[in-house]
Amino acid sequence: MSSGGVDSSLTMMLLKRDGHEVFPVHVDYGHLAEEREWRACKTVCSSLVVNLPVRFRIGGTEAIPSSLVHDDLDIEKDAFFPTRNLLFATLGASYAYGISGRVVALGILANPIFPDQTEQFFKNAESCISSALGVEMKIMTPLIKLDKRETLKLARARGLPLELTYYCHSGGSEPCGRCISCKERVAAEKMLSTESD
Image (cartoon, rainbow, N blue to C red; front, side, top):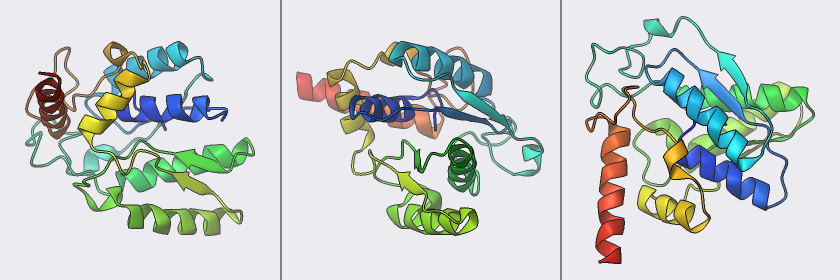
């Protein structure tokens, strides 16, 4: 899965370097940051020289009370989009199945905030999706032991062009500084800066 952010982009880079052929899948679920994420996704995929991303468009998500799709909700406090990662894993698996793939990879990090970001959740999702498909579908989360600081450090060490990625939930031209993603990124950058001093 590819959002155009650092985590999914680093995941693609690592998989490619390990010899996997990468078929990026991007999900437009009506979120505020979609257009900037999609642009970043395409740019990153081109830079990494992987296959062109496939874009799934999911409508009707305005019925879900999440600030990721509603700009009148609190961008930080109302950020939970229920079952979002299950949706991503399911769509990724559906696409993988159609091209005879048997692996879906997501850029999930340590220190989960929401219930669909845990190792146990992904084990359960893997079992459920495999059962639904009638074949074994592996869900990989290669960064799940790393926090944002460690992920940024690894991304820089591997030469990932961070300037091509996008991370703000608000979808603006400049990071809002208020959303969970912005706050996580700023905190990680500060820790890295302290380490290098």
